[in-house]
Length: 282
Image (tube, rainbow, N blue to C red; front, side, top):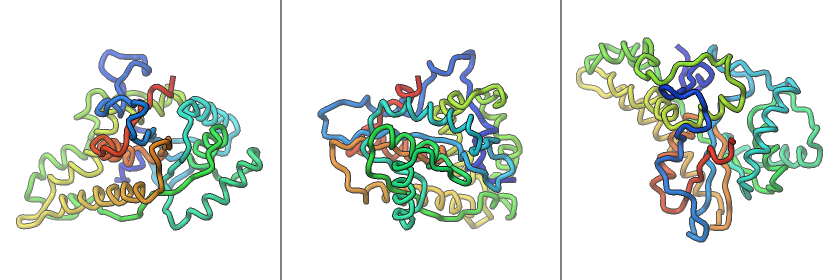
């Protein structure tokens, strides 16, 4: 089984009896509406699948080197540019900020720059920054490993029946999630990955459901789930390390499982005010 944190392409969300994506709830439904003059830092918290190739067998098939696909991503960037960000944060580690910023500077000087295998950072974040005149871009990722297969490797005495049943076919427990990804265009896929129900699923499948695994006197599953929470909390702490002012407008681009955690963290933090992502995907 491959880690679900990369399985964005195989799990896409339609709400029951709805066929139009634009009218669906999104990740910001748990937050207050953005209000000017509140002193809160405006944030557009945006989740995506990883556009560059990955070793995961179930990753989304998306050839980021094809000009046609690059143009489609740039079209999304044009939509998102209406947010008018002043700072962009991406899923790279802070230790690589100098390299990230040099690459971004090169792109600003030459938008036709040919990256060998562009990811969502080069395709979406860089183009959005160029269109919006953003000068500041930083990475906030934090690498931590965890064993998402722990329930298969121990004698599970917590709730092995439920654990095994769930991970055998997670989609079965989310009746809203059932669509052929090949029928969706890029914009539709990105709308789905930013949908509240999809984000809830990513937290459950990556962390919460591991609590059903553990030995007689152990909490192995819960401890592994805690590692993924810890990683995302450390990423959130990296956000706070950035010098941000109330006038800043922050665009955060990450794999959607991190977006899911940040949705919850941001919604409870009075320093920030998330905007409605769907307002910028029309």
